[in-house]
Length: 325
Image 1 (cartoon, rainbow, N blue to C red):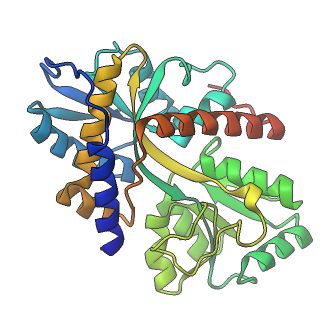
Image 2 (image 1 turned 30 degrees about the vertical axis):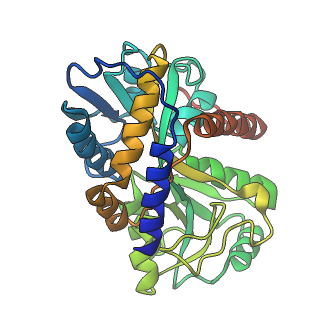
């Protein structure tokens, strides 16, 4: 809770530090919708709903969640990208929908750089490398040694082709020199089930799905891909700590708006989203999900998204991965 309190203070500091621009006085005149590119019940959906509740009170207008899952998030993000840029349609953007998917697709349905404006960061979380406690290796070095010695046996599971976890795994294979078969699953729950049943050797998952299994001793998390350790898995070192800083990667969730949204509306929304993330009820939702708010000032956040787009486009070119839309 001390970390969440510190995060709340940081969010409020960011919200209060924005310059006194001439905000669009009449905005909003009608309900605002947030397109969530995932089904109801997941981390992105839960966070968006908590933020929407707080924003509704602050803005004096309903903020409505609309779930548009499909095609690894491309369905919903395409809706946002082609909506009118008036501040009344927003979307939950991710590393996948803003940086990875557009670089993977032969014919993307939207241009993430031109069609979307990054508005506010919500949270950032690493990929967790997870193995069964019954596996023949117990740490990251053992995992890699096993993979190199058993190219015909090694496999790994992710949420699907083109997911951030898939790209991270393929990058690991290239950098560390091993072979492994990709086994795509429909979510973290079936990956955990396959790990426990020893049907796969390595699962790459989100921290909230993994933490309780690690605490119970059923799963080992020998490494995480993020830039720093996380409170829900304090015993799991980063890949950078293990000598592989070039494998650092984190999944992130943010709010975006269609291109053409007025700058004063973007600035107002950035402030309101940061305020909503600092609300006590929202902080409880973060804590329950094993997540931490990751606020950033507007300009550095937008620069961060552009840098991530450049980075992952380069990685995908290097790996030579192309997916059909």
